Amino acid sequence: MGLCEPRPKGCDDDCPGVCGCDGKFYCNSCYAQSAGMDVSPGTTCAAPDDFAAGFYFGGLDRLILRKVDLARDLCIRIVFVTPPSQGGVFNISLPEDWGVSDAWITNSAADCEASPETPPGESAQATGGSGMVSWTTGSSMYVPCRVGIDATLIFSGAPSWAPASVPLSAAGIVVEGGCQ
Image 1 (cartoon, rainbow, N blue to C red):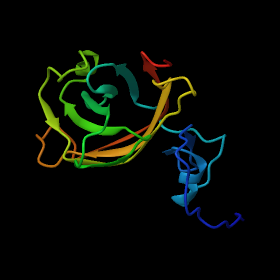
Image 2 (image 1 turned 90 degrees about the vertical axis):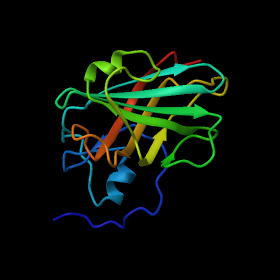
Image 3 (image 1 turned 180 degrees about the vertical axis):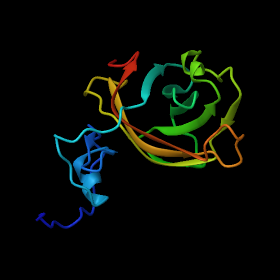
Image 4 (image 1 turned 60 degrees about the horizontal axis):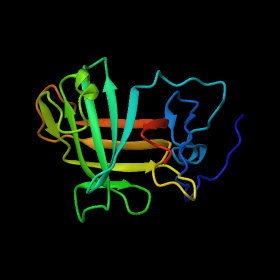
């Protein structure tokens, strides 16, 4: 017989990643419990997608997160900038002074290996998204070493090869050019 506990009312933004008893990834145990799920170190989640991140200095400093979906031959990119622009279609919680600039999907997983600028393959812009992204930096650091994400991007009206929504869930993604 299980132990009944009340669902948490608020969870912190720390995203080390845990595996729920349902085999799904959750940012932390609080988020799993909020979804009505227990976590167990003996449970294994499905193999993670291939995520990568890179930091690029410029007029707008950018952190670009990439997800390779080999099974569907897709590349998903989401661009975070500081300072953030006002408004937008993304409801994604980020560390202070950061915002989502852009997100898109392309019809080739190889596009994730291309330059950080606009991808070379056929692409579709995200029309919305929600969730959270977290990272921490040391007191004298500006660029994070690792990033975690638990979000969903929406691709309304996209070409038939693009899914209507794409979940992005990963923790501990190493940031190329990070730890500065």
